[in-house]
Amino acid sequence: MKIPRKHSPTSFSASSTATYTHCPCNDRDLQLTCVQSFISFSRLNYSNPGQSNMSGRGGVINGTWDRFVPPQCYPNPSILRLDAGLEWEEANEPLHYDIDVTKVCGIGPGMAFANSLLERDSSIGTIGLVPCAVGGTNITEWGRGSGLYNQMMRRAEAAVRGGGKVWGILWYQGESDSLSKEDAMLYRTRLEKFFTDVRSDLQLPSLPIIQVAIASGLGQYIDMIRKAQLENELPNVTSVDAKGLKLEPDGLHLCTAAQVQLGEMLADAFLRIMGSPPAHSNSPEKSHNFFFRWLR
Image (cartoon, rainbow, N blue to C red; front, side, top):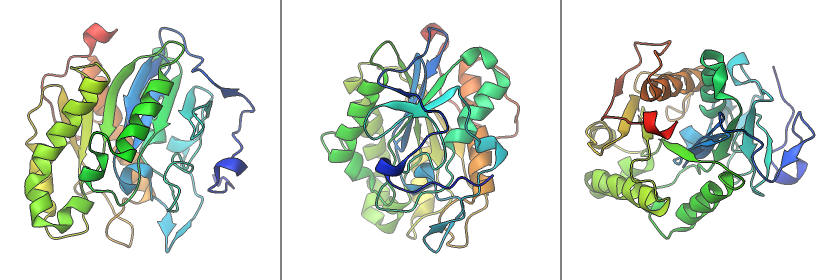
């Protein structure tokens, strides 16, 4: 499936003509928010912040997206996204087209994640995705009070207006921090502070966070970043490992098939948190006492 869509908020046309100022979900629905990209199911919000691999570069080669959308990423009337104008619309790839505006966006993990959840648990209802990721960003650019942090928080707040709840964060970032040994050494401290600040500002001290351990990087300190991510011991933080997933020819970004696989791995992790058996039991994951049940 190829979707002819320009990377411009003014030219966006969803497959559905409806737009929403509030998420039209009922109490059984979920809203998810992501830092790289916020994901929300009506009443369940997930925040996914991060860099280009969360924003999505699948199918982007030499600055051009091939416009191929795999079936796992097809639009679904039950999957919405919060656009740059803070209005709800039916989600389509590229999910971050009006958020990560200085780069060409392609396939990311968000749509595969949402479709996988709906396929395995139809009782979820409507899923709302809230994209926030921006490519090429260092974790210091996501610190409390920064432009990216403030934008993420505004989007998270908008996602819950009209009756919603932030249910977790999907975080995929760290490639830029592999350039500097100092940044790599400080990464774990900065990462934990970021997670703690987000939870504090959302007034959700036990907010679930699913982070992706990077598969690639811009510098020579990739292993130090991965170690910091995989050894994170904050409560209610779980890690999904992207190492070994296929990369684009640039050696940095996940290819389309890998983004689909990652989205399904993230869905596995989410369903483990909710207590449902995952479909892909061989997904590498590390959990830290995720709670989630009481949020129902």
